[in-house]
Image 1 (cartoon, rainbow, N blue to C red):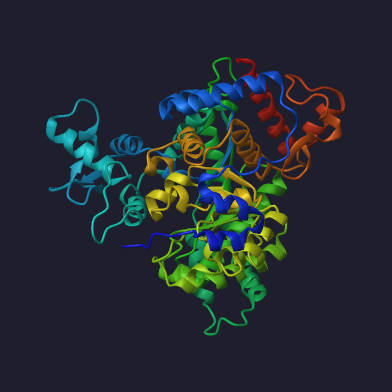
Image 2: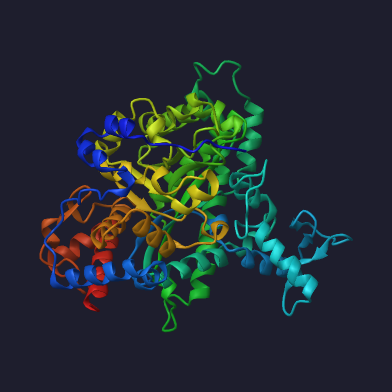
Length: 538
């Protein structure tokens, strides 16, 4: 698949952002520093660490990586669990499960391991040269490692093709995978994750087939379909999804020795979940799975469990069904949000580039996700400049405080979008909230520190800019309760109760009570405490 190289010409950007016309006259928008947001006065420690950051950035990526490894990064809000696990882990798990490897297709296969299949257990322990070669090729097949696009086979094809190759493992490993991702986050001073996961929905899918779908999609009785699915027992699968999360969390905490004197650093990482809906299915299945997701999240919130907090649609946005049924899917979410207003919504939208789909397909996805799908966050948002009235859309995103989950490495690997071709500077210049995330760090072979380094060097970010990104992620997590900050996305003054205690080790009095009553604020306060500890080293 060949895609056109997207261009953000001065005339287009000037139309989008009139206030930046002077900067545009001087050169490319991506190469210009974005005006710094309002911020509190720097402390002496902040000034010292900012100087150290600048020196590290001037020294290059390795030095900056070493500097930023322990920098407090707050949240990663766009993480697919299956894509976050590294291929080496899946190969180890396949050996434990007695799974086979197809050495030709370079994927897992179900036993028996008759020729040409080989047992995955052969790839555990000391390897012969031939088995080492197979191991290496399998890692490459499960990721973007060593990938080079060829005519007819792009990074998009490789990326989305990996998931079927490493599927079929026992779900008992889920807790181990959560532990791996949480441990990696803890090692990089990250404190909060929202992991996307798809719970079982075969029962809901079967019920949807019984009920069917109307021939005309213009005037669908969503309320009637919802009631029919509930009457047939769709809620029976809610318990399954919730129990799977409990089991995974119990296993993760066991591995990390949480609550014991031997507790590992990963115990400090809060993990919550986003319910994934597969949007490439038939519309009746998509509606049933979406309803199941809303029901599961609503029940989780009602029970006060640390499980699912929000919903998202996944699978390639440029797929035929995804494109054809995009507006229909947003209408489903629009209806269900009216029934379950407590459910948070983050949506993949705009993970497209010119040439992937007809031009008309680039013009409305982000806007519909916000205006019809009630998205509080947008995943990717890469094609924003090609939307109808893009300038108006940017203003709307800023006014509504809709955060964009920025996935730099993923966007390069899948879409071929990087550097000045990426809309990251557009969003920042329009004061749209943005935060960095990893998407599928195992498939992309990266982690969150890599994304901070990349953002800092590619877009000439300052230390204050990186703090803004980390704070924005924590501001837009889906934890219950109020924000620590008096005004949304303005990190200049905390709420009055905590104004004089920001970053202290042990908040007291009214601040302590406020944090106990508001999980989001408590997580944000922890980020500020980590900032103070990090900066004290300088």
